[in-house]
Amino acid sequence: MAEVEIIRTELNRKIASFTFDAVEPGLRYSHLDESLTGLQIQHVNRRGKFLLLYLSNDHELIIHLGMTGQLLVSDLEKASPKHTHFESVLRNLTTGAVFKLLFVDPRRFGKVSLTKAGVYKGLLTRLGPEIFSKDHPTQALLRSKKPVKAILLDQHFMAGLGNYLCDEILFDANISPSRPGNTLHPSEIERIVASARKIATNALEKGGLSFSDYVNTDGTLGHFQNHLKVYGRQGQSCYTCSQSLATIKVAGRTTVFCGTCQR
DNA sequence: CCCAAGTCCTGGTTGC
DNA sequence: TGCAACCAGGACTTGG
Image: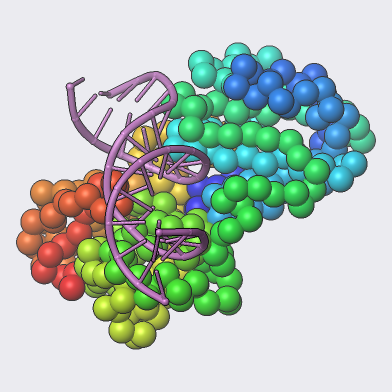
């Protein structure tokens, strides 16, 4: 979430009002045809982990970075890196400024698609409220017996929480990741929501998590990896109680937590 | 060989 | 029994 939000902000600053020119979609995105050429970027929004580029002529470019996706804005003459799946020239018709926009994704979990504005499908139509929205998360999920970590990862509960944020949030809230949703006290749910906003704010302020692949649109790194309390720290000691941090699988994802502090 | 990630898909189980 | 709702786990992908 934090990483996508940072990219959204940078795209709005760098390429809002630019027009697509000379689009070269990679093999995977062959449905991105020449109809993108000539469309102007009006505004970039975000919903969960999806980037939504509102374009002229009532079109929208929807981008999901998957796990290893990078969206880079660079100079025309700069060589494109390996695993570039989509490349286009962006031109500001007023100032004459020109950039390249690249979508780079070694693991190819990311997706780019061009649609009519507002015509969403798949997960995008069923996302829960944003982390910073005043709307309550989808409480129905909390009546399930699923472990709370699985509920946080579920984009229908709250949109935008990925694996590392969930671990950091549950540590901050002192809740065990394997606690069934239907055992959570309302005050514990409030704690989790408050921690989600706190941790997400912190990750944003630190420029996002560059644990493996994330870079901002300049290609430079974020710093949140230097502020993690549990994620990636299995076997090391808890900063609160000095006990060794444990690791388990929840919903198929590696989960790190403190068995002493989190109940 | 195994692991990491987010989402989609499949097939199985539960509950009314 | 019928059928929807729910849920677990695999597939996808490639570098370390």
